[in-house]
Amino acid sequence: MDIQRCKKRKNKKSELNKISYFFKLEDYSNRVAKLFSSAPFGYKKGDCVAIFMENRPEFVGLWLGLSKLGVISALINTNLKGEPLRHSIASSKALAVIFNSTLEPTIGQIKNDLDKVQLIIDADKHSTIGAVNLNSLLKQTYPDNVDCEYSVASEDTILYIYTSGTTGLPKPAVIKQSRYYGGASTFFRAAGLGANDVVYVTLPIYHGNGTLLGIGSAITVGSTVVLRQKFSASNFWKDCIQYNCTSFIYVGEICRFLVNQAPSAIDRAHKVRKAYGNGLRANVWKEFNQRFGIKCLEFYAASEGNCTMLNLDYKVGSCGFKPLLTRLIKNVYPIFLIKIDEQMNPIRDQEGFCIECEVGEKGLLVGIIGNEPTKAFNGYANNPEASKKKIIENVFKTGQKAFNTGDAMVMDRFGYLYFCDRLGDTYRWRGENVSTVEVENQISRFLNSKEVVVYGVEIPGQEGRAGMVSIADSPNSIDLQGLSKKVKEELPSYARPLFIRFTAELDHTGTFKAKKTKLVEEAYNIKIVKDVIYYFDAKIQIYKPLNKEVYEDILSGRIRL
Image (cartoon, rainbow, N blue to C red; front, side):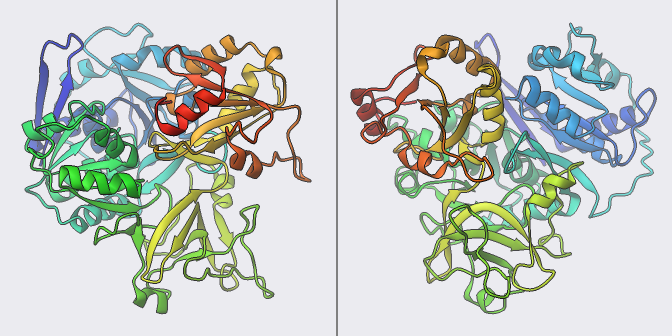
């Protein structure tokens, strides 16, 4: 196994190519294990260390080394800042947070709120916030005789990978050893790839796709991984050609960005045979395949869930397949679509059990929970209440439990499943899950606790749903310039609402929850919405009134948000 890194230097004068062979990564991870098992750290099995880093080989070496001690690595989203970042670190109960120099200012902003958390910087320079220097310590560590009393067991936790979940701030999903190694090798081999393949990884490796499917292909199968710090559409095929890549991992947005690039002579000059990922829309899928000559293996999975599906024969638009045999012998592959009401709650029969959907009927995807690793739901770390909310009780019989994906799908008569929508309080934009509750809390705070409701709306030609917020107030009462500045400073780019609707009052349920169904349906359609709507002008980074001309330009794609 070797991991290649291709990263732009800040001066942009040249490319820095850093090759980390297996034995080098092994040496580095052994140094990490030796360092953190010794004084002054003395970390042991069950402890947790947060890793807050951009894509780099050291990121992998850190969690590999910590795993040799049984120490859990919490992989923190590098887009987070302020309270969401503090919460993510705190919720993992991490004893330390390791970060690289470019993220030092972000950590510095919450330093005083990280109670008893050791700050460790991976850099060659002195820390400006008093963090311990990792590089200096590793240079003084000799790993020849790493004494690890800890023995790896399949049901031990190796990572926390964060997900927004259905409500609230990011939650650490528990990833067991069996899930990581089993999942990584299964996906890679299902794609028909092996040790001789070179996988291009541009997704962040704090993300499940990047670290499990990307880095995991090298760890479990022995492939080569080309790791880029950040996705670049203009350099994508150049990198693939330079490093002889044969495969890459995607989310739907990546394929759309590539399709939207101007046609080039190098569109088919690469050696990429297959790509695997999720969220690829049918229209982009067809164009991508025809233009670049690459087969796309679409799958469905969730970091914390037990519903994993593969589309092995490249059926355009489908995210998975359920063979006829497994539909007849239901305990073989216990993944089902169940009927739900308008409030997204399971509809039950007279005996109180869930009802399976008919072919062609939209329903909620659930996975029956069992003891086997592929059927287990390991929940969220240190959050039993959030874990319980993801479980549906008494599914088809008394005592039977299922994991609630929160995703609506439909299955055709052949067994292919098609993603319809993400239900509940999250939506997906720019390849990231966005918690509506988190964004609502932030914006409400900006507006002195005014009532707001956040939801996702579709924009023609773009994957996922963009953020929209309805505010129960008049635009004349809001400092829109100040709000624009706060949204930009406090929220990751993918979580920033692109539309604002000002309304006299918000409609509520009997339990005082804001009703979102009608708001989602009306979206930013000024032909039917009488309220004032603003949109976020990306060029000048401020909210501006939405008029009919701009509305039509957004629908036609002449204005990109």
